Length: 366
Image (cartoon, rainbow, N blue to C red; front, side, top):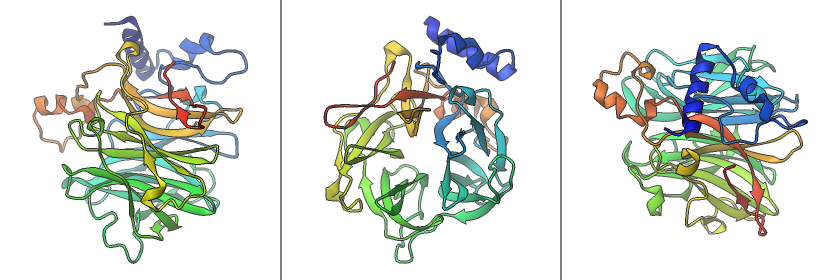
């Protein structure tokens, strides 16, 4: 085993058992005046689907999928480096049965119209692949201390009979040219159908205004490994362009990222406005021990420079951990170990976003 992989495993163990902190160990690598380590190493351990929102109060708010998929946790820190040691607060827990009782995935925290919202996916204990997007809203202005209220499932537009009627997840919210949009992944035909990305304008934080528009479907070989998947959209803008990154294929080492782009003044709900990358813009790098990078979000550093937050493992062969599986899961030990979803070691990481001569984002490991 390579030294770096061994070191990361030791760091994970130390963090879990409270013997040392990641930021303490790596503090010497941080340059004076900088608040995060320019490294491929994790910024938060065991958090897949990482999402960071920098609020006007100066705090970075972090959330992501907890390995047991049974709750929504939020933490905050004044610096990105401080997020690993920041106390995670469970603001909501899954139901015992019915909607939102299994597979609580990919939460995102947004501040819309002066209020806090979290968008996430959840399924049912009796139908674990009946995933739908749900919304909770904070009752006050402190998302770590104030109560959260369930607003139910995300609602389709009145004249849209299709959105959120099948396997749906990974919703994100963004604003552009005075309009607010919702982008999400949905399969038409159940768990084993293709997962496409859809886009619609929003009427309110919990309801769409327009009929769904299919932004992208898995077209290429790198989007069709084990499963045909486009999911995990995230938005970044630069130099008169708007870009939507997404992740593709199954959640193991084959997981990778692609990108869509459109002119900033184009009609975002017109398929002809968008072009798609022929090849992945980020994928596994064995030499750097980074496997299955993806499901990213974007934020900025203390100086306003763009950063990408993503998850990845340190090793190729994911192994499910029985401790992460609920007691109601009656699969055999062999089946659980073969399920990469229950390998908890997808860690949150970051990289600086650079742009090429045409203004397109470039994603490069350190």
